[in-house]
Length: 171
Image (cartoon, rainbow, N blue to C red; front, side, top):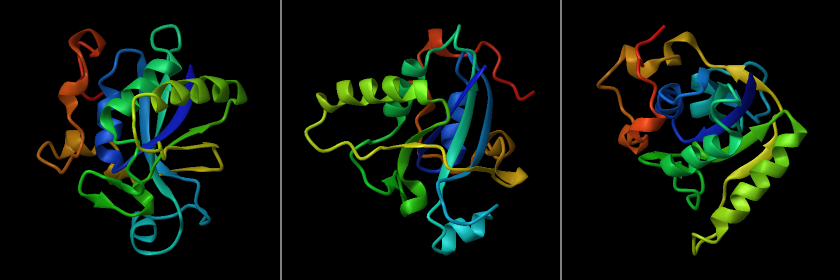
């Protein structure tokens, strides 16, 4: 199993989107790249912790590649929007890819380089080594399963049928 941490705005929708993909074995909402140890949602939302809302994606690389994980991130975000996705505005809603395996950096840079050709504006997705990942509070985990009418800026129909797990019920 491999892991990558991605930021795409509010982590509720990002986590649910990845949870539905074939090859993704686990998702965990959390916070990364900030200056506060073990931050709370309130700290991230209302103080200057500089954390991003992120999702740690655990995946089976024999079933889904990092390039495909990144392709899905770019399907669900506007990579030219700085600190804003959907109705959410603030540095905690920035976009990013945070890696632990240095071998992933070349794949990430190649992918973003290819994407640059498709946008007139600059791509503002952060690409950095993962500093620290802090798991978000339990009520944020599987949020859209627990709250099916909850706010979500992500269009789940962007997942094509052949990419979707057959059974997406919570485990």
